[in-house]
Length: 158
Image (cartoon, rainbow, N blue to C red; front, side, top):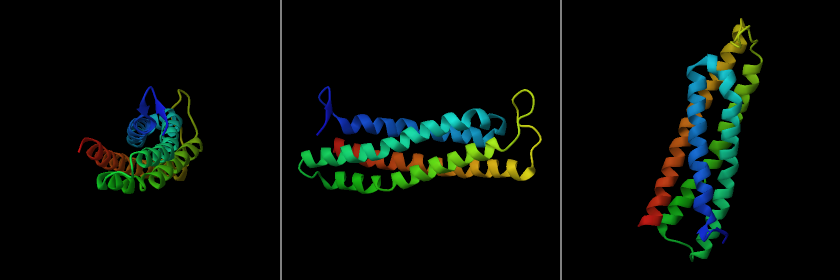
């Protein structure tokens, strides 16, 4: 088991997941609700989501190491691990949708002053639709983070 200053690595890495993925969801919701902000928020939000998604398998592998050093763990730990298996596919979908938002938004021309200019309706609708889809998936990802985290906290504190 890896430790940092005597603490198991798992809870430290988990905090990256718990902070970054919901933060990316907030940015995605803002970008979906306020199209004028989409161009400014899309890339930073994508990078935050990507960092959070990269932290998911790191948290998972460190969790398995922690579980093995603790003798297998309780049924609560098993529940936490089972729930965690849903997060990576959802986080990858979230990142993919955000990348599509960035790509689609770059197809919308920018007018003077940095605001989206007159665009083909299809490009603008595509960017907006992808932003809404990414926001919905982001909310699901955040709900999964809470659901998984609750199981982990129950395992630790029970």
